[in-house]
Image (cartoon, rainbow, N blue to C red):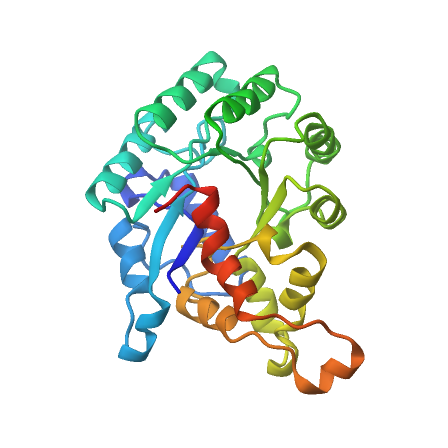
Length: 312
């Protein structure tokens, strides 16, 4: 099985402001892990993270990774370079590692018409695979550019990824965004939306939406791995993912690492291995816990992303 990592982030240390470095330090403290020992989170560093250490791991080799280039331009942490310069770096990474990396385009709607120009250019000229919206950076989903952005996704027949975080209390305007999201899902029933990461989104919206709306999917990132592997005995680790599979269907779930944020805590190889060996414990079967089969796992680890991103 050739695995696809649906959710990674890349940057160079030279792009980072002091405020961004402080944010990374706070994140490390919050996750109770060591401080990031290397602020370079480049393609080469990612490839080393997935490089098999032993021959027996070679069957777990990741075939492809999708980059989430978040636009920090309007935030306090922002990058030292513009979002467009950052995207051009991502293009150079994809070109250098031809066929391994691909990317999304995710300009903040507060760029106005420029946001739409970036979408046009990077999808048509650079082969980007979809559109990223990260409302937790502070923009409103009521911005008029949002509708135009979704229409662009329909025009190019690419997915929209709603990339959000719930690790800190949300301002009221972000709570309002959750209501607007549901309205958007109703307004665009033919547009594929991926909500990620699963455990960091509003649980009611996620569970009800994924179960009852055919055009919604989610990614199963390493944040889930941390909560599952760090807090559950071995015999119960499979239960949350098996229940997700039973509730939503494996065709709605995508494997993701969210690298580099959780790599020190849950290495990618460990997360892949955890999903590959999923099975319902024998003593839980009489209680009615559903099972998960190899076809389900292949869909989660590879086939869904392959079809969604139109990969060979």
